[in-house]
Amino acid sequence: VSAPVEPADESAAYLFARANRERRQARSSAAVALYGDLQARHPTSEEAAVSYVSLGWLLLERGAVSDALSQFDHYLGTSPGGLLAPEALFARAQALRAGGQRDEERKTWNVLLARFADSVYASEARRRVEVLR
Amino acid sequence: VSARRGSAILARVAAACGCILSWSGTSSGQGSEVPVDVFVACTRQVAAFLEGGVGVAEPRIRWSPVDRIDDAQILLRPRERGGAHARAWIDCSRPDRVRVYFASWDTERFLVRDVPLPYGWTEIARESMAQLIESSIKALGSGESLGMSRTEMASVLRPEAAPPPERPQRWGMSWGAFYAIQAFSQERWVEQGPGLVVAVDARKGQWMPGAWVSAQYQLPQSVVTDLVGVHLDTLALRAGARLTRELGRHTALALQLGAGADVIHITPLQGSGAQVSLASERFSGEFAGQFALAATLRPTTQYEFWASLLADVDFGMRHYDLVVDGSTRRVFTPLWIRPGILIGVAWR
View 1 (spheres, helix red, strand yellow):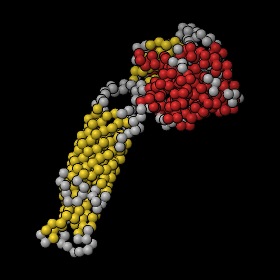
View 2 (cartoon, chains in turn cyan, brown; view 1 turned 30 degrees about the vertical axis):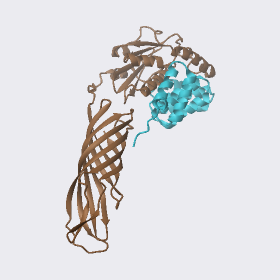
View 3 (cartoon, chains in turn yellow, purple; view 1 turned 90 degrees about the vertical axis):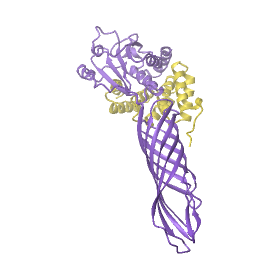
View 4 (cartoon, helix red, strand yellow; view 1 turned 60 degrees about the vertical axis):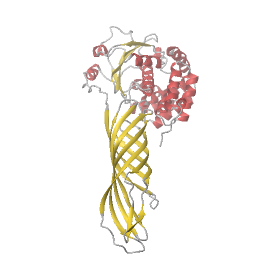
């Protein structure tokens, strides 16, 4: 029984590293394509899990609010206890704010406050909940 | 590069939503020109990665490499408001986790975030840290009150129980359970059963040698012919050496060679068509060798799954005979080379 060995240019680790490099070098189109490729080829890999947050921010920055939202939702759905769960909730609230979805944004801030009341995001969450009341 | 990217991005997103990304509008009254100071006590490589990977432009980040995190510096109040909007310290002094401290502009409120590094500074860890810091810095823009007071923070900063010095673990023990199915004979195609294995392997290096011992109970086999039959209970004991090659963080291939003995309890049976005088039950030992190629999947550092292609070689070339009037007739011959497959799980 031999483990399937993928060509280096198709492995999750390779695609993830390349996408990150493109993101860091401000080549966001290439980064978006590579993160998408990673998620399509290796949807359950650890690299793909982190990429949902990275790609979500890139899409939000490009104005693709609903696509960004689905990335953050995917992370929160598949990794609810993940390291970046506070960041994904914070990002989700930002995306909802950008999309003008005030009710959903308020709910998201409330979830963040309930789950991560001691996080660095709590202060902003409380402020926005007050504004959106 | 990241700052340029951040500026353009922030302008777009802020235009779209008027979010907290518009730093200067926060109630603390800080202008966008006021930076967040980030002190990084990491290796030069990690520090460079974080600086390049965090794309926040507003608030501007002022990165400062430091040799180590100074507790007094964290608790020190800035002399005047306006020096930095907030401050963060990234402490990479421990190999198993990175700790991030956040302090508000007046250094009266604090937050601490621990990030575990189960596999060290991998690409996943570095990208996760970049995302975490980037989001945190954005959120600090409106940070009126962070989590902890000065007193609480001072208690966090008390020296932690020193972690045991990191000694690269050269060798490690694992133990596991497996189930194997092998070809057996023309009369009974397969033999199978569960087993236990204990192994000691090198944990460092490209090629990692190791040794293993296993015991497998093979489910009873009965072979009955017209004249006579036999019932076999077998305990297969093996020990040997192996060489493991890591293919990735979670996968490995191993080549195993071993030898041992099959301890067999033999019970002669009457045949289906004749009455014969049976020999008494007895134990028999047969020497055997084993060769295996194993693929290992290691989801965590604690346990692993493996699957093997293996072959047992029967050194004794055993066979079971019937003596009729002084002449010997071969009744049943197990295969001398018995290929098979094995799946198992092991804890490390």
